[in-house]
Length: 348
Image (cartoon, rainbow, N blue to C red; front, side, top):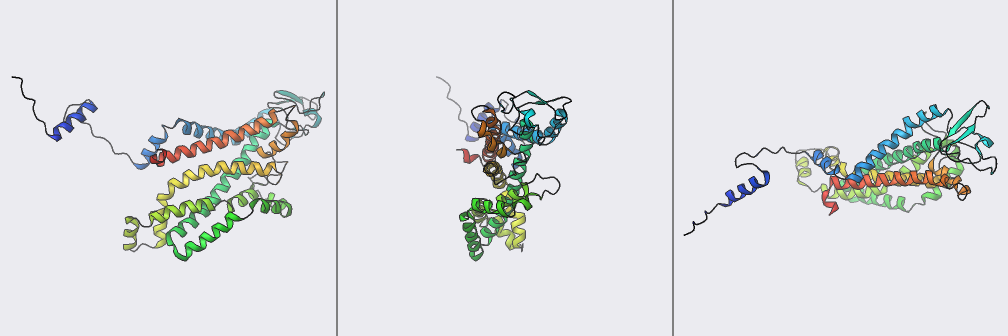
């Protein structure tokens, strides 16, 4: 007779299965180190190749806009605002010269290399204006995002935590701001006190950046406020909040020490997404002539003059358009990757 198979307990069966999966004998299993929250977020994020590539591009953009622009200016020997006039035009067609053109210096003692050609009839360097335009876009987008997120987080956290009449007041203010005609306000601002506000630079900003940062930030806080309010409404009923109340913690301490740490993930994710939106908004306003002054290099200003040459020199639209496209795409992909890293269930 064949031997009867031995009966194994459920624990032995589980141990054998674990040993088979790990390749070790029973009793020789190695200890598994516990992973913290941020380590798990990083492990999930680094597997998103698109998000990693986007983050690297954003780092490259900052390097190109700040040290890179200054280095390029030093090597080329001229600035983004230097006007070469007819020297930067083709003598036959009187159109801006094309890429990799050597333009005679204003003093007539040499030539300057225009890597991407000249930008318009003024004969300014398109390449340098593109690099310095990245500064304007990043300063406006990031500054407005910080301002809008700060106001939105405070308003949303207060409304969601306290509820009642405070929530009602904040909700009504939010609805008023959402219905406000922002574009008409910006047009009125640009035509009245815009020139005086544009000269507020604090010694390091480009002219016009402060004005757009304030306007976009003040009218861009309501979406973050609504998101944070919804998150706080669910968090305030959790056990750790009730425990903090029982221990006598003040409302301000509960919001600062117990609620804000749980809001880090949505704040980071939404900030990356709103930066891309603000980059496009700044370019759109500058394209319409109510954003950054025309003499200041910005991607919107470059696009505003490019349509004059869209048949003869289409690259004048391609360079700033491609910069806007890739930048907004990078921030959006980075935001999607961070969202999936912080909340893996959102990708299913």
